[in-house]
Amino acid sequence: MVTRTALEEELRNLAGSVPDPELPVLTLEELGVLRGVEVLAPGRVTVQLTPTYTGCPAIETMSADIERVLLDHGMTEVSVVTVLAPAWSTDDISAEGRRKLTEFGIAPPRPHDAASPSAGPVPLTLSVRCPHCGSTDTELLSRFSSTACKALRRCVACREPFDHFKEL
Image (cartoon, rainbow, N blue to C red; front, side):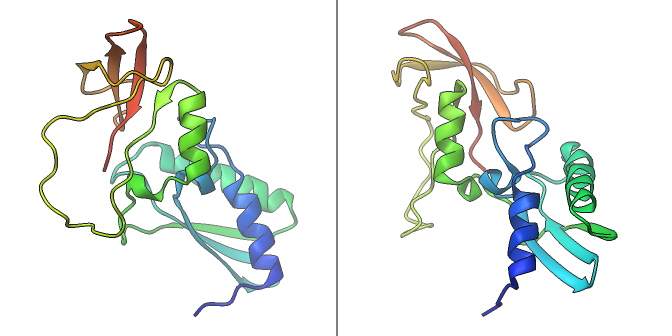
């Protein structure tokens, strides 16, 4: 079991509070991409960050924002390293993050059943709930939306378009 120091916990909270550059309604902690913070020596810290998918263009901005926040907090050397394993999954989004996505008008990804990750076949149709009216009568307009990790859907009931954060 890894024990974090009070400083590491403080720095993790600061790094985790950085907003996602593509979804500023979420913090990096709520998105689940912040993997770890380790103080190497006085003033020197390494932050582990996992992109939402390999090649995610936002990883550079996330890294720069984390560096800026931690340097402003008194660190003299901040290293943000990209960690690809374990891969990020939409299950890494916190309950608060899912709530914020819905409140912001983006249908959050459905969580997988943690008790039985390989419980059977994946359903061929997704019942995506409209974040505006709650109806599950929605249709896919485009597999890609403003970012590659979202799809554009429309609610048949209220006719409002909305983004859906894809399950990974």
